Image 1 (cartoon, rainbow, N blue to C red):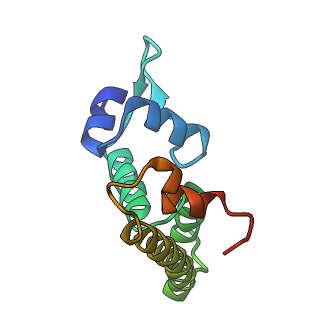
Image 2 (image 1 turned 180 degrees about the vertical axis):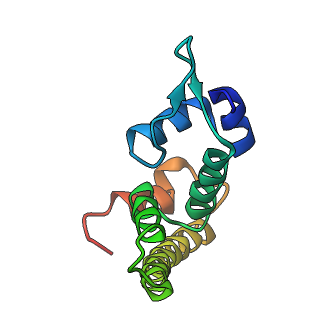
Length: 134
């Protein structure tokens, strides 16, 4: 059995993150010893690592809760997980498109920026201050 600090360290998260995961229902409330300290099994560390890996590829905590539910659902199939992953890929692709548009706009503005011009002639500030939506 592990105390909260050791479980957090092994899982690569902070103690506060573990408490947050518990409040969000991603981790079950742990057993407590006679002193009232939380005691965790190694299985909790494995779940924390699952949560962190899922976050690393773009899943939100809500998504992760859904994945954890599917994981223990005897009627679920791999395609259920695949559907969720494909949906997340679509979300990521949309974010990439938005980021690319943002990058293009900033690149155009910085390319047009004369380094020695006064700030009153700054094309970046002018672009940000325009009334139109372009």
